[in-house]
Length: 249
Image (cartoon, rainbow, N blue to C red; front, top):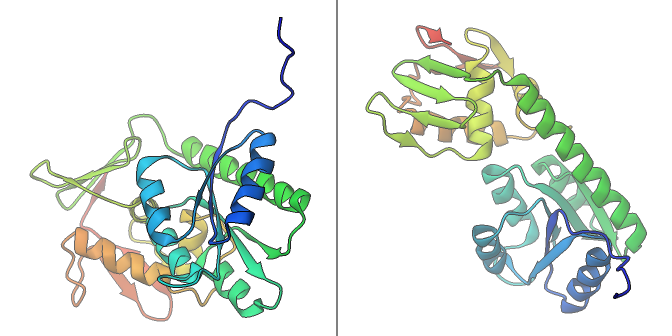
């Protein structure tokens, strides 16, 4: 009988985005010994291809990628399109980048050169918080939860939005979370901070404008005229109000 392996059973999948192959190999070997499945990407183009082909729980992203899109630009796009957990790798002197990265919505950052055990602890902490957030979101959704408003149907369990013609409208994870949070609170003004807490469950900075961007995208998908919206209204100096004639559950 062969000797039993001491390597933990693989569970979460991690994508390391760094142009330094040495760091990718180092993290790959170390994290796989800790039971994670690890892939690597040297740039944003390779990262997007990986995200289309596999499901990941966490991305470790170097903010100083040379050529093409830098890490901050990639982090912004990731946050606007997905709620994947994100840890940034930064240089010791990149204080401004750390602040911007956290404002964008990164879960944590690690400074180069880093201690592998510290990085592992941060990975476990971020993934644990992500699991808690997902469980809390599921617990808040009742079975067969369906909201209907202005000819639209929002299926909370299937995370689907359909129009009056039955056609499905594609929503990113954050767009769905935003619409669900507002549709569950009709005729109630929500500040940006309240919305961020509801949809992201992270300590976002009050100057972050990502909510405004999401609102704009959501209005376009709902055919809500941005110059005279009837579904998502702007309350100047306060936030946003979801105001269809009626929301049926």
